[in-house]
Length: 382
Ligand SMILES: *Cc1c(COP(=O)(O)O)cnc(C)c1O
Image (cartoon, rainbow, N blue to C red; front, side, top):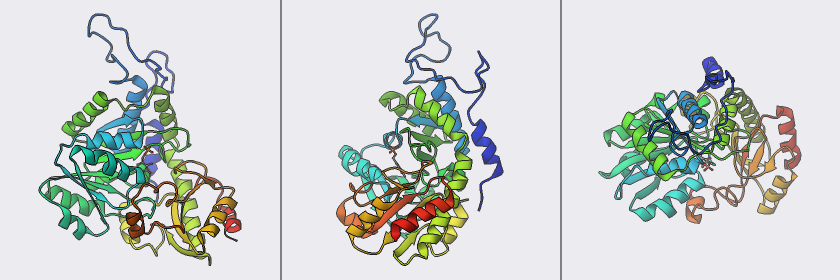
């Protein structure tokens, strides 16, 4: 259970070559929309920044390196990345989605893409027989988010790959929560990996972004065409900030993970806590699977507090190191109330079924000192 030493090196150098003109060690921000041509359609490889931009190109090489993939593609948000993946499908195609997905993913599929003749079916993917039963001839894609948000369920990627292959469906993994440092879906056979780079990859709560990684040439061409034709691309400045963030991804993840585990242990012993969700705890129902397919468990910890909703709110308001805010994966600790915040768009019956209720709190442990984080929870819970 630890970070591969080569990953510390990889993140520092991923995608970055000294600028050939100046020798600048950092990739310049090419803040330009267009490029001068010497004759019609004769240029240096770039013609318009929706199609390509040198800063974004470096980022896309870095994305590919992070997941050990052949190709990377950058998008203006995690949801824009998801949109591009879904847009390679055709009306009538059936997509199986794990039931505990990020609220915005469910909203995109249910409220937007369902209008265009695509069929989405949300199922509990912690049991392989559920997937096997739900596959039908029109199933073209299986969408896995693991660990899930906010309940940190773990889905067996390698076993799902087998079912996807039999069905000739594409297996997509939303790897946002684990980060490329702690989980490598391509090594388990996934076809497409995506990230909301707003979270751990960005890591500083200052950008919105998304990434798609693939190995297959044809799949790359299809998704790249959507990126170019629909245009949900990041600007050069966001691309630069991400290149900068990626260099510290491994060291940040190490501290997030250390804090996450200590917080999970602290909460599981606390008398005001009903239940704790953290794949790194031996009490987690899929702890063995988590140890098999992950190399660490990140800073994401969810728990149910005992008491009334008012007491839950008071506890949230008393926290000082943790700020009450949406999002996750930044260097500063954040606390979120999924029912009222990130997962408010999930249909109520689904929330009840999943166990996202008034007492559920989700923590994104930052990289502050461990004793300060624990002390903050201690005073807020007292
Ligand atoms: C935040 C998030 C998304 C959506 O990404 P945005 O950058 O907010 O568009 C998708 N999946 C997961 C797991 C997320 O946490």
